[in-house]
Image 1 (cartoon, rainbow, N blue to C red):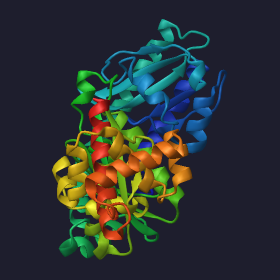
Image 2: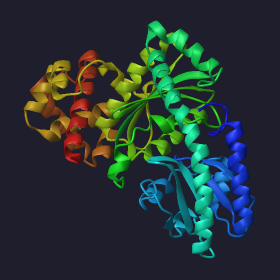
Image 3: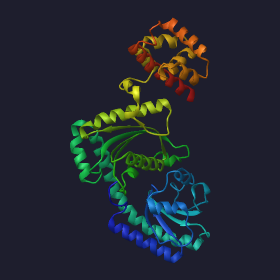
Image 4: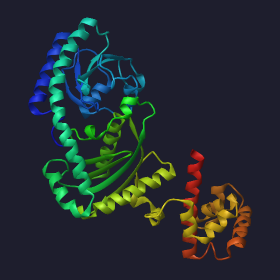
Length: 404
């Protein structure tokens, strides 16, 4: 996450020399990734090539989609070479993956195209290179532990108002945050990946999140089930790039991003507030069941009125006596009609179309609601707003129950 590469200068040169020598010996392209599948170095192109290698060389990191498929072959847990078949969906030719380990510590992967098939003699030659690479990359990983703890601690200090100014200044000075851009806090709720092995599920992603990377750096703090990210973005594209990178990295630890909440901060002193807002946005995203995109605080509308309150049915009752009466009346059709009516700004035509019912049917349902709540329940501004928010919360809770 700093401006330098994933291996120190001397280490990078030594890795490149070994990779080039192996390429010359085998007459095959050779590539070395770190455990997050980010390219550390590659040989000259010889023979077969596919879209993943092209993307890795150009972008310095693979697209996120193939990562779960690659991990499903057990390469993260293996101590011996693993053959991966070709995959047309991801534009990947067959490969042989050589895990690079120093003892139990996984430091990276060496890759050879398996087309034409890699011979046993070639596997032996690659194995000798892997042993040398393990010494170089393993030495780099020793200092990575200290870096990971520093970044974790800096992130924690950054989102506390009393320590934010000093933490941001230190993070910028050490290259862990950019000098420019608007602060954004992202809170990611994590769950186990469906295809993860037991070993991968036990992995703390903080180490991979803390590797030096190309591009704009960001701060990250992992606690069980959650990631807090502090980035400094010049545009929405910067923020999207950070989240895409983080999503891919946590997959290598056997985890999956389930829901994301984000909030912007105008200055260092607003980061604590942004963190609280991002956490609430992530909670609402989980309630709504939206895994597709981060829920931005700035785009949450009236959901923001519920910050600081538990997202429960009791909160819905406390917000609006009308909502409590309507829900406890047991007429699901009634409260769902009210939600659609208020969502549509009390527009009869739009509500009828949304519910696929005749206008006369809509008027009948609304009249039944007014008989229960009173004639002004849907028209009095403050009363209707409270009813609307309460019913939206209740509706989301009902949908969550249905998804289980």
